[in-house]
Image (cartoon, rainbow, N blue to C red):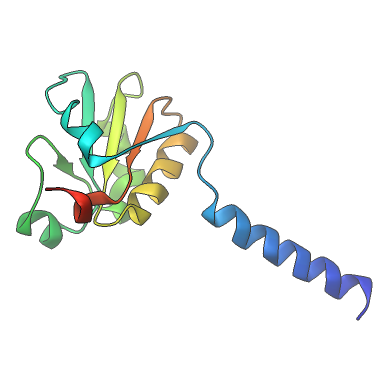
Length: 119
């Protein structure tokens, strides 16, 4: 193998590794911790699951903005207020957290484990 092949493999591995790293500046909370925040009127609660998933089961106070629509609808949210994001397992909300950070939201919190850990 020559150096070009090694470089391509290294860049590919770096790309994959970065995909799974937590986003810098994103807080992570459990659903237990989430329960203590649900009455805070200064927090925006966003559920990034599909409308069907949201309709089937959701937490009161959360607004449904599917992940695919988040970048377009983010302008409806305040960048000055904290945003707490949830999905089914924590994967889509992790992606949503990255999107919000890139769009300039300073206080973004991802719910670890998502709705699958909500009781």
